[in-house]
Length: 322
Picture 1: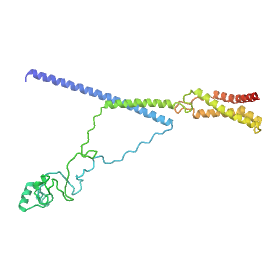
Picture 2 (picture 1 turned 180 degrees about the vertical axis):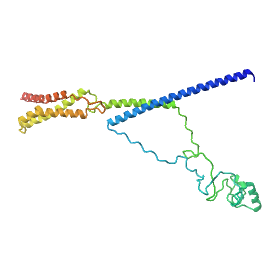
Picture 3 (picture 1 turned 120 degrees about the vertical axis):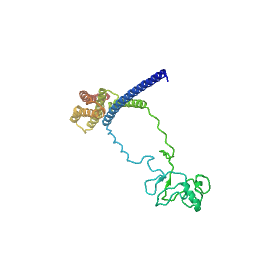
Picture 4 (picture 1 turned 90 degrees about the horizontal axis):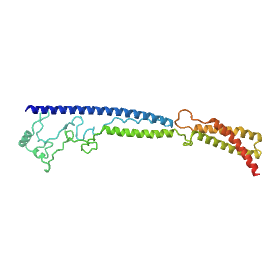
């Protein structure tokens, strides 16, 4: 090899080394960006969880208890395969092979294993073999040829003998077919999907906060208009009671002093406290900083003027009809 070829090879190796370093630097930067994105997303999710807990407590929903942890159990494909040994005595697993003749195993005292050929040779001199697995006196060599009558490729052994099992790939479906390998997941794509879901959760959380800042009673009205409507409604209800007292006074059930006391002080006070309680119960948002205004001077003025003015209007109407 010439010097020019060595120089070209050195330049090629140097270029590959620089490309590898650049790739490693780019991969390291990508991993740092992914870790930063994961940390930021974790902070967002933590803040969202705290805000959701606050919303739940504001509307009277407690945090649900965590689900119970699943108990330990054998996973799919972890149990003993049918035909394999379980470790019990007399249940050892052996790999399948060509069935041997009648003299494949020697006496139990010596424990030595002889070759299949020697066993078949000894069987030729002694006559037909009746050992388990030979198959009704057939020669052992015919066991490898499936399809012959009376000969099985895998002989049936009695209970307590070694069982034969083929090594098969066990899938979760239990069909004996290897399960498909899961496709590779891109972390950047998954983080982008999680970020979009977090943005959607923020949007729904803001809508929930806006709804939680509205009271149940007249939610689209301003606080001042709501207070005026509530106090005016309570004053109108007190006006109905005032008409009932006037009718009772006309038939002699209520005297004039009692009627005047209820019209000037009793019914206006009942209307005022009724409006105060209604605003405190149904006019208060689920989430609000501090106590919402109830406009007490305005309510006092409306209630203590509306009922006497209603009585005066009733008197003018009765006199006008007469």
